[in-house]
Length: 90
Image 1 (tube, rainbow, N blue to C red):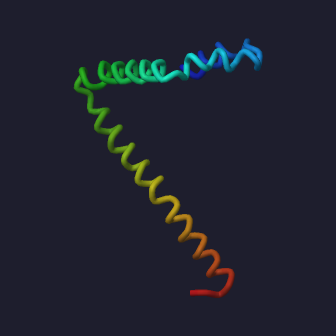
Image 2 (image 1 turned 180 degrees about the vertical axis):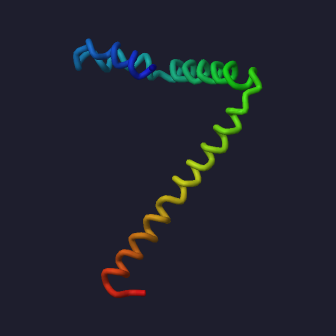
C-alpha cells in the first residue's frame, strides 16, 4: 500500500525534480520519524492486543536470518561438490 502511494506521488515528477522531492524524505529526522511511527503502529496492533503474532515474527525472522547467514557456506559446499563431480574428485 505504501509503495503504491509513493509510486503515485513520484510518477508525475520529471527526473530532474526527483532528487529535490526525495531529499527531505530521506533526511535523518524524517527516517527517524517514519521508523518511530512504524514501531508505534506495531505496538498498537500487536503488543497492546496481546496477540501471539510477535512471537511468530521473531521465530520466522530468526529462521530467515539463520538461512541467510548459512547461505554462502552452503553455496560454497555445493560448488565444491559440483566441481568434484566434474573432475572425478571424491
